[in-house]
Each structure stands twice: as C-alpha cells, then as structure tokens.
Length: 108
Image 1 (cartoon, rainbow, N blue to C red):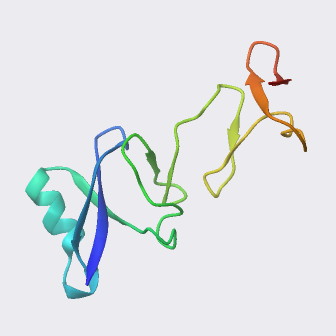
Image 2: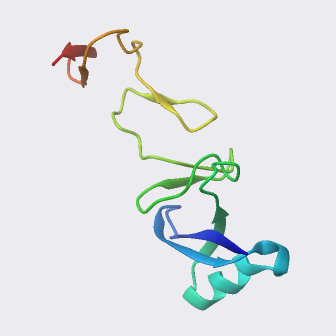
C-alpha cells in the first residue's frame, strides 16, 4: 500500500511531494524526513489528511494542521479550513477578478 508525503522547508513551504510506504507499516514521516534532512508530513489525495493534498509551493499551517495555498492578496483572510476569502463575497454569476487596489471585484 502506498501513501504520499510532503517535505516542508524551514518556512513551512512544501518543496517536494513523493509517493512512499503506507504509514501503517512504520514511521515513514520520520524515515523520509531523515533521508532529506527536512520535515516530512503525510498528505492525502482524498483530502482526509491535513485538509488538502499538498503540492509544491503550498504552506503548512501548524495551528490548523493543514496545507493551504499562499495568501492570494493582502486583504484576504483565511478560514480555519485553509480557504482564502476576499473582504467582499465573490459575485454569484459571471467571471470576476479581484482588484486589490480598489478592494472590489471587476467583471471580466
């Protein structure tokens, strides 16, 4: 059985994701972490471990024990599930782009 593991740098940024041994067979987070001299954390394609499947460039949040994308804009805030939200809700219909300077959505 296989599992997936994310390597985290000193800034909690995911720098690599690998397929490895299932954790039920041993402490593979420690084993792989020692091989690369980086912290190693299990992640899941099914999103049932640490919020979302980790990918390179994502951030590991120790408070919530989740992987999340970097903050898209300074004005956005993160929910405890790792989802970023704008200060103004996304419009219901159409395609929109966030304008950080004016703190509003612009229709495309």
